[in-house]
Image (cartoon, rainbow, N blue to C red; front, side, top):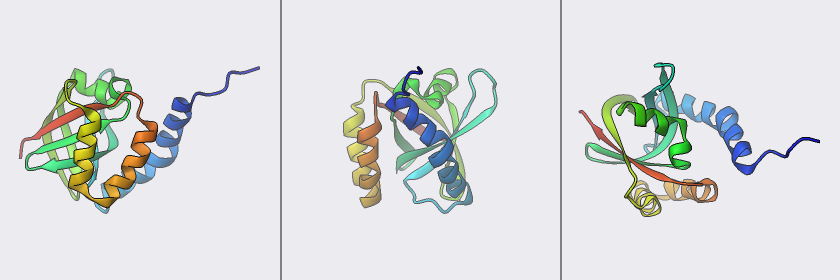
Length: 144
């Protein structure tokens, strides 16, 4: 008799194979709401570019995001290895440097992001709160 999959593994499969491909496609096409972006990191083992859809809030040249699963997220591990990232917001790619903000309160940061982004972000936040296991704030300082 097999072991039942955990909630986290089911969530990860749903995100990886059902949600992320569709969201990634909409962001690449430039039709996603401003709160959704693609973060492109360099794979820590392969050295290849890896793109992950994320929820962000921009304040000038600073972009904030909160990783739902913190250091268990592959893109966060990639940032730990190389802080240079690209971010696609709207129809434009931006380059920048990401920093993991372990002393920042990720729940308060997410609340601030929701305030900046409006009603759609608050709706997205409902799912974030249900699924987040060990959230971690990421700050990205854009080069442009």
